[in-house]
Image (spheres, one colour):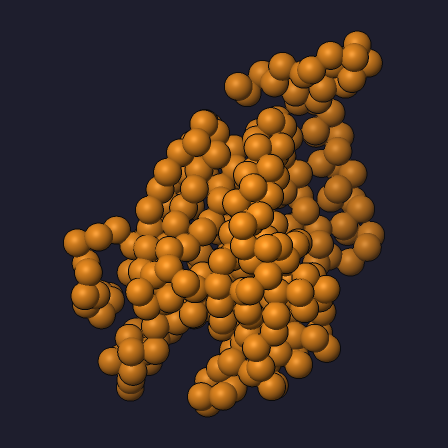
Length: 268
């Protein structure tokens, strides 16, 4: 299955830059508000899949070029494949794989949102482990306005903000401010634009200083247990805690705390 042609195919869909153990992925179709075309989805999914096994990468920052973070699926591409149910299903299958993969890679993903994040773009923010936005950023699930209910974006968004608020976004299609997104729990902080990079870097640096093995195990368990019933969740989490304590970095971390020194993580 091939995606619709892009006007600037010779430039990468996703840029990658490394700052020590912090990897910065940047959506690179800013002139079109970085739509989640099939090519963009596949490029981003491939980057996450590759980084999942990269032991040097401890934190991933997901950012975007241009004025907007991500305006959702590429409507021109969707219309170009009107009537092709197999292609449409393939697109959403690919997008679903991307969203699930984001919860399954060991590295925490931090969204850096500088502008609009709508529909599947709002979904992308919701699937990141942490999210920080400029106070001028806006969020919406506006599909209902054009006859396409945002059913897949609702999966991630509702798990961040709860049912009633998700349904408000889905049924009205209205834009919400970054301050509202923070209040509802879609993002961690709404910040003045000039402070955004500093705060993202602060969190990324702090997380990168932790044990990769411990963080990876903890992230995996969090997403497995969060939608379970209470008994099953505690059973899973208790087993994970026991496994965690068997890790060399757990012994090192506890010893370092008791000895009042900085830990030296075995995983580098």
